[in-house]
Image (cartoon, rainbow, N blue to C red; front, side):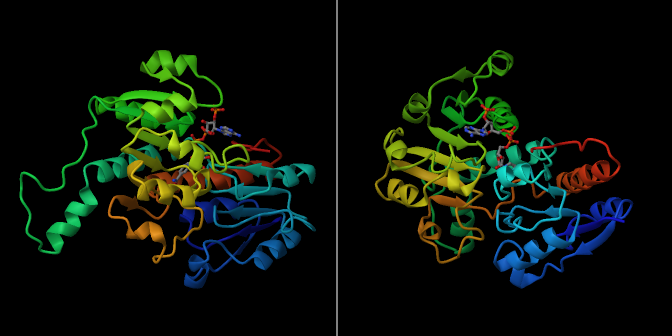
Amino acid sequence: MPCIFVSRDQFPSVLYEKLRQVGELRVYPYGKPAWLTAGIPKDELKRAAEECDAMVVYIGDRVDAEVLSNARVKIISTVSVGYDHIDVAEARRRGIVVTNTPEVLVDATADLAVGILLALVRRIVEGDRLVREGKAYDIWGALMGSDLRGKRAGIVGLGNLGTAIAKRLLAFGAEVVYWSRNRKPQVEFALGIKYVDLDELLATSDFVILAVSLAPETRHLMNWERFQKMKRGAYLINVARGAVVDTEALIRALKEGILAGAALDVFEVEPLPHTHELTKFPNVVLTPHIGSAAEDTRRRMAEIAAENVVRFFRGERPLYVVA
Ligand code: NAP
């Protein structure tokens, strides 16, 4: 029977049940120390790649060229849609199949995107703190925020996630524009949203929402030059990947008042240290990469990640192959 490595023992049980149908599992006991470093130790990943036929991993597990340097593994299944933690080019070169779990997590992540946008622009987190701290407040003047109706939301990256966010923001009465590598005339027509180039999006949007995958072309897409192009007083929302934003440039944009605030579910370094400068801004909402952290969604992701492996060992095409 093939050896299947699973990088943690806390995935929904369906994942282990399905995988046991086709192989013998080697499950990494993912404890608290590992959580503090986001993924499992590199030498454990390397050993798994050398000794097992399949690996099931999550976004903190960095499967780079060194991990694959002596690999026997034939399939890497990530329980996520993003696969920037895997050196896909190297995997492809070695004939290793890489699979992911798109689509099922789109609604949950779009919900979170709108949730943190609202938390930011309506100052919900600040309001919660103010009430708990027992400070005096004026019920007319306290914590004035921004409307959504009539404001322009600019979505960067109109894939599944960007499209789902667009639908939600339209329901709130916002005007939605987007920029994406490939223009999507059918989505434009179906939703009534407008394509603009990135400079125009940045210059005119009240809310800029990042929903683009992390790739060499999108790393630090939001750099200082682009922050300077933003409408003054706009808000930035990032539910994509931390490295799509240059964190230093973001902090400068907050300090110089280019941004009225930011809502971030993802960071260049995860977990974000609680002493990080970003935690000092009252106008920044921070969530710990919980875009897909909803029970049914996570169960479906686990099921699909396992199904990809099951199909592979049965000689069928996995459901979602990225390389
Ligand atoms: P998707 O449907 O595959 O869409 C990918 C998007 O990224 C598209 O807009 C695509 O542009 C763009 N893109 C990909 N490679 C690019 C490149 N090299 N240069 C420029 N644009 C590029 O994926 P999705 O479901 O929308 O998810 C998007 C990303 O969100 C994921 O990759 C993941 O990193 C992140 N995400 C985060 C969470 C979370 O927990 N916070 C949850 C889910 C997803 P075109 O379509 O125009 O080609």
